[in-house]
Image (tube, rainbow, N blue to C red; front, side, top):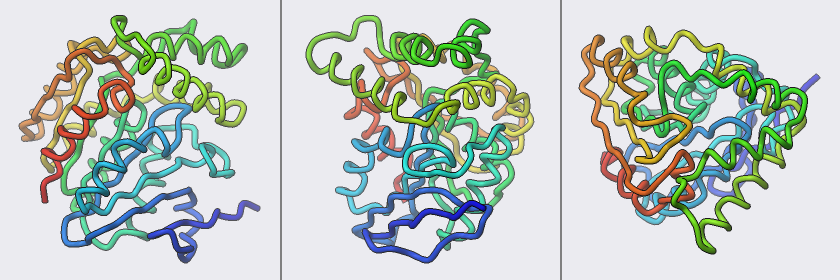
Length: 275
């Protein structure tokens, strides 16, 4: 038996979601007139990866909901093993918690979840922002094996490749340390499950072709994990369904965009989620 954790809505305990929508949420709101913004984290991360973006958007009076995926962060339910299952969970959360279409934002693995959810969710999703995304999101066999047999080594590899090669100084060192600590906080096995889900997701082109809302693609110029050149298939698939995706490349930045260039990402999110 798995009991869903308490949720926080405006810092007050809220009613529990149905079993399909178990998860952990932080919702901050200064105004409810604009559409809510939903943030979906990536592999072996949790909702705190968005803390700088959440603070910025909340300061602008936006209703922001940052999620812990099952098995991540404070959530103690079993992690889900496929992008499709995570997308179904996300849509159940939106149906239970949000009474209007949302701006859906996902990073890395979270971008695949958001893409699949937007394809399935129809009018539940008003716009889609994919940060650090690519199709397909294949994972090197050596990294998959390390995640299974030596997760500390795998986390170190990911942390090294997540940041721009030119990043340095005290701020860069602090961001790297915080990113590594966040990955290490996740329960045993989560990293391997998440990477396998990314590597095994083949539904991206069909999902992209089914998206009917405005789409923004946000990439780090120096991203070595999902390089900007790798989004062309994603862009083509979106266009095949009638979308005209807007692409924004953030200079001097790698895959860890939220931590490495938070100000520039905040500006991009504000532009993409105006209403």
